Length: 166
Image (cartoon, rainbow, N blue to C red; front, top):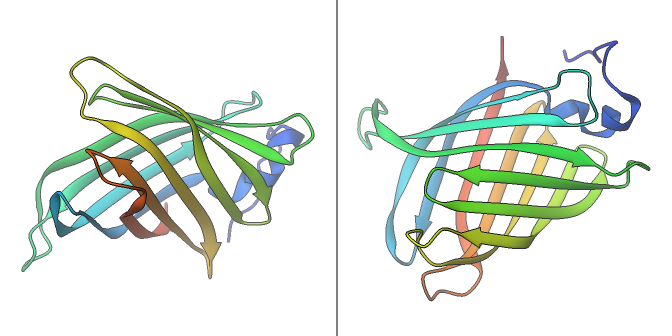
């Protein structure tokens, strides 16, 4: 059972359910890539200030054995709730040369976000927009992402179900 940290700023209380270390599996696919299973580890933490720190690492899983094959995606970022706790920004950076700023309303144990801006380095792939939804369902962190990239319209790209660990 998750308990609130006494040092947690009040403005972070609506996002407290994200805090912790999570592990699980998901599926990634897109018209330009074959669908595959992946493993994921997320750590969401705070240091007493008014934001959460987000670190996510994914890796390709062998489709038969489920063993780790190689790293896939890494994202680092921050969840920044509004002063009144009704909206949140998610700022993410990726080693592939992409920076994203998501925005959306805070609801109990559910976040529906859309990109407000995407910045790409000159060497990054074409990536234009995305939506993400995060939810706490029966103590599991479930999330999905739709993406518009490489000439494709906004459509399903990735989903995962994670369990709190530690």
